[in-house]
Length: 328
Image (cartoon, rainbow, N blue to C red; front, side, top):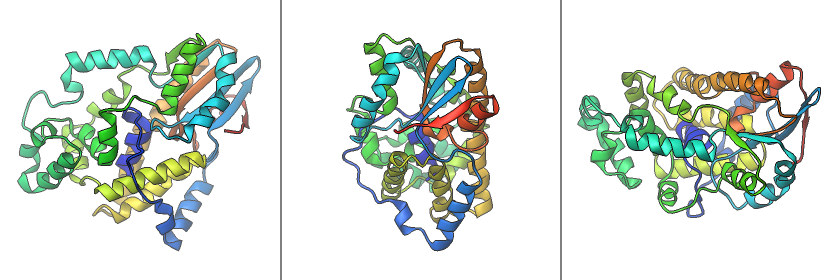
């Protein structure tokens, strides 16, 4: 489940998933699981809220927690956020339109971002028996086995964490997550937009992980279709309930029912992902924010970046900003 979470929130292009079905995993939690999740969330600062205003001296930052996956429920949200785009001087996002084009160009000239450019294929590295369920999961998502066998293991892992219905929509649908909606609004309003980090940051992070560790991550197995759809349905419900901290902890706890690993091993995997994809990036983003001179700034980034002691909200508070949650 953690792969579906990270893929959906942080990495892959926004998609429409009207053809997906799935059940909210929270309805099937045991009392013990629910209590553990509640206890973990209770220890964190800033666990809820997708829209915040941070004020310090003459500067105001409107921080929007986004989701990269499309949903009809985003229509009224976008309308409510439009006035913020109208009045802002600058908007920061994870990937601006210009940087998305850079990434597309880099992918065309440097296939090593996504594929193994040399050395043995994943079949050779994993063996036929371990590779078989991975190949089947890839086939279910329309990815030929020979292509999957040459993909970077981390990229294949996060891709297989998404349900087939999402992969199918990605091939035909125009990106329409909240990020893309806000970018279109900014373009209409002639609002300058910049990326909060270099366009290839996520790829640099994952490709720096030793190949053996990436293969081990992939070896944990792909999510079955129903599990992937349930994970996505749960994530989206939590997003619109503005419970971004709960997303992480529900994913952590329910992963134990899907993976043949101890709770300690799953926690270690989660903590590694959180450090790479949230903690380290948030710290660098704060350096970027401190250098911005705009008096009225919109920051629209994945909602997973908001929660906890390493989240942007708490970091802004520690930097002297006064925070106020606003209706989303």
